[in-house]
Amino acid sequence: MRKTRNLSALSMKWHNLAGWTGGIALVLFAGSGLLHILMTWTGPQAASFFPPQITMTAESVQAVPQVLAQNNITHANMVKIVPGQRGPLLQVTTDNYEPRRYFELASGLEIPGHDKAQAIWLARYYSGEQSTPIRDVSFQTSFDANYPWVNRLLPVYRVTFDTDDQLTAFIYTEFGALGSLSNEWKSGLQAFFALLHTWSWLDGVENARLVIMLVLLLSLFTMAATGTAMILVLKNRTLPPQRRWHRLISYGIWLPILLFTASGTYHLLQQSTADTQKGLELGPAMDLSANRLGRNTQWMTGFADTPINNVTLLAGPGDVLLYRVGLPMGRHGQGLDRESRYKGQPIEKPALYFNAMDGTLSDLDDHDMALHFSTRLSGRSTELVESSQLVTHFGPDYDFRNKRLPVWRIDYAQDRLFVDPASGVLVDRISDAALVEAYSFSFLHKWNMISQLIGRLPRDLLLLAVILPALLGGVLGYVMLLQRFRRRRS
Image (cartoon, rainbow, N blue to C red; front, side, top):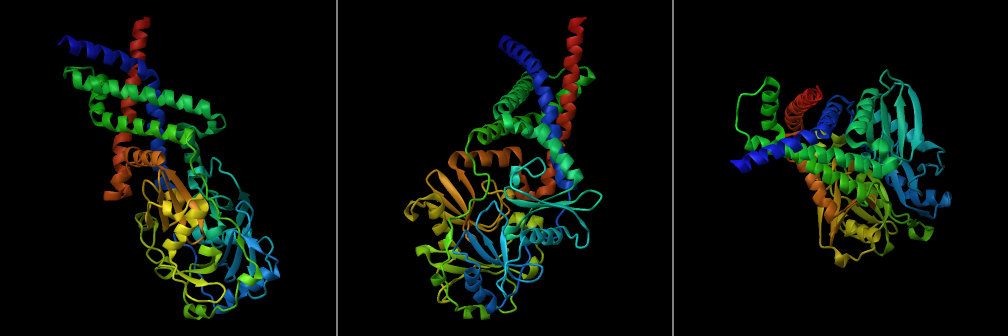
């Protein structure tokens, strides 16, 4: 009995001490978590979740060597035929942080400054705003408050429509992707979330951000842990209304608060101190000398009048140039929405590869190309690959921020690469330590295991059922601390 009283007194003491800072932390983090859910529910939604497709003829592909030679392009990181407003265009990337170059396939002429026009066309396609005037377009090479690093894709064009809410699309032109769709309302919520939840406004002084957030999180954890001990030790008794409600709420939230706080602290330390991959990494430049590209494109006649995602020129094993043909699973992404993409609905058939010199069908597939690119990007031999698998849906180790599906996961000892065989790009990279943290954050902080079982909306509603009582409990607890303080002062 005496040990119980001592534990109760000790828990009460530390609960009250930690409550001064922990109570503020609870209101800040729970309140901003509520903003995140609200932002997801009320933010603008894309009109399309599938990139635009193209149809082309054998002549389109046959023109590629001529266009490259005509414009003296002997080296490039990326060469592909992409859909454009006026039909198929040749897109050439020589520097990931410079605008892409575009060429007409029929004439071989470059279209000056077309990357901006391509971004506007894609912004209209994804937003559904086909006739709304454009207010502003800017080329963005760094992340900021309105386009944080979780979006991953850079550089992007920021296309703002002349609407009352300033609808803004962030477009990544390399593979025609929508990086983010925002408006004044979502931007405001996002700013408050960053201010209260991640404190990203202190990114310039990372050590200060880390110390302040650790103090808040550890205070909250201590407050929750000692509160849990009091629940287990103290017997039920008649209490004043405030304390009674505070105790009743605590029964339902003590475990989620401990999980949120522990996983949040782990996430903070991992993101702040580890060297994490925060952007796409292009492969080395390809040698596009004229003697490496032939004119035999009769294989393209089999795809006449067939929708195609893209045709990409890639350097395969042995530095042999190959055309990769990406074929959509269905016509125009029919039936594809945000939820189906998240769950991994296939969006592309197995790709076909053709030798760029003689036009013969290659035995290579996306798996072979992913292994090839992983060795080029990591500097490791194929023999060091421990396992590989196709990733068709987003999850803890490869989440929605990466935008690209499908990709191949190539596992090495203590390291794994996520490679897009359609472009030879390293999309993400994660170490063993980061992988453990990713699962911790996904399951214990974001509760993604629930969304995988019953869907994202029920998960959000369950989170609300925890966050709202937690806010009420935090306010009641802080009021009681202030009352206790005033009584002692009087």
